Length: 127
Length: 325
Image 1 (cartoon, rainbow over the protein chains, first blue to last red):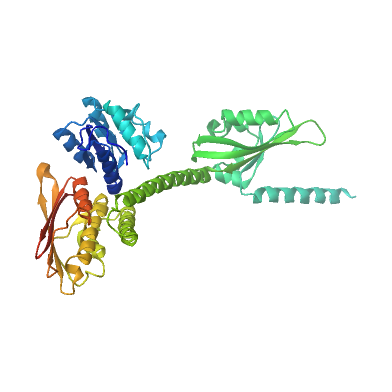
Image 2 (tube, rainbow over the protein chains, first blue to last red):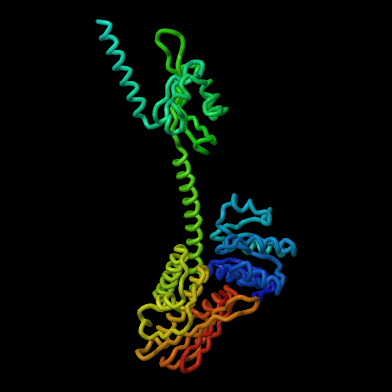
């Protein structure tokens, strides 16, 4: 599908994926794995994601905004303090996203997410 | 014409006009050229909780402790008086002491006196507070629906992408896809209804009529948070589909036993431990390749921060699933 960046064993770097919708999460994982990244998660909740980050610090992260009744902002804040770059993949309006300071200056790839654009963006974050 | 007839004519004209004005449901007030109240209709008295005797002849902008002293309204009336123009549908939002925050569309029109240069100003109010609230609510619902539609489309797309295509017929792919879509749709309905789902009925419903008589469930009552409904029903759906194709539900005597319990896990989180055990089925051989939904079961449990263990023992498949609730 998308040519691997280095090899197909995840040496392209480690990406945390946070997405509460099961199938979308699995698809994002498939796309990133096939592109040569190692995926941390996908995590479906704030707690789960923070657990994963504490176990291993990722090189970058791909975050959905709404996680059921939770918002992704605590994870965004934590990633900022760790200096881990991240992008959003959310159907939420720019207006709503702009109300959260932890998401200042973060780009949103939208949903459904174009897999090629997703891979390019993650590659750019790892460059 | 006799003076009396003339009086009657005038009087009936006046009574009719007053009748018309009083019948109109929108508040109306007539002001003279000094902006003092000449008359106000019943709707005005009622809507603004005014006393008729209190307002007659008084300066409009001083009424009710100056509640009408609104800049926008002053400008409106000021614009109407020098010109013959009428102003229609001028929006005024104001917090009125007696009736609270309201939004009115105000019409103002100059009524010229035929005999002299004086003129009255007719001001008509239409309360659009409710309509506006309703419109805002509709906008919100529309935006929410659009958001949900986008999400749902993304989900459908992902299910199609995640349903393996290799080594299977188009018919098989289609049936698998439709089965999964069906589970996703039902889960979405439960999630939207916001009522907690119980594990046992969800399990029985997901396994469907084929397993109804052959499913034995043991475990405490477990209320599932809405976010766990899709993953758990998808896991059981995949297990049941496999059982119907290759396992215990593919032969008449096969049975499935499902046991579950709740246990305290790390960091004080409650975990659901669930065991799916197939019995009296055909001899089981481990699938020679991935797929057969096993990837999906593993991925689903991992996604929730849990895990799954599938044991393809010759006497029947056993699946052990642990999910934090």
